[in-house]
Image (tube, rainbow, N blue to C red):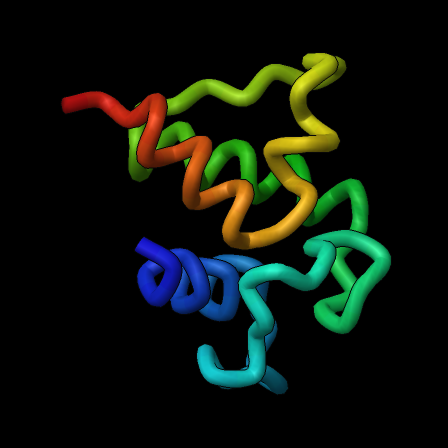
Length: 83
């Protein structure tokens, strides 16, 4: 799951300067080394919904935890993905 998410981030958010091995799964997604911003968060939520069937709503109190790191996002997807 983590490697798949790394590739998704790179491809879908146009992070061509990064390789999957460059992404620390425990590093913050926002305000960290990847330089993601609120627009990227929206795009990422749409990608997660399309690929995994998980709706992440704007303003949800859990979003900060869900998007805290790639590891946290992967855990959320695993726990909530459509079977």
